[in-house]
Length: 164
Image (cartoon, rainbow, N blue to C red):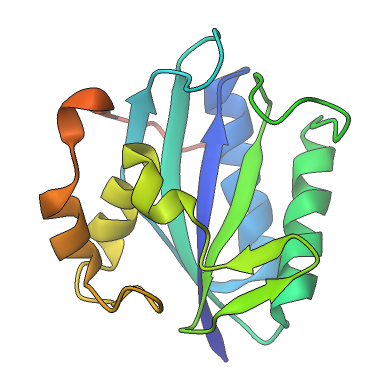
């Protein structure tokens, strides 16, 4: 069984789409653990603020099947694949890590580069997996978060009411 980490985000009807997305993740994966939810500004475009979190789960699925199932969940929440990369979205689910595997094929890359680039990914990942090591950098997520330039990407931890 593989341990996976998934970034979850939304800036359209955030509460509904985050809750429904996490409920759907529980139908595909086992032992789902959620980080806190954080609010952050849209990066790379002008848009409403995002809610973000990271989910850990276990799966027997291979990494490509996981990615395909994440895309199915996004589409069920109204995500359109024709949209530009930096745009508002109902639900964004990105496979960040698949055990300690390093995968690079046809535009599919694990670990995701966003882990070290964005506070809204690294902070919640650090919260639920502080002592796990990045498969390429070999640093713990706690160490990476401690060194991250936080002022450029402020986060606000929110009290989130889960619909489950």
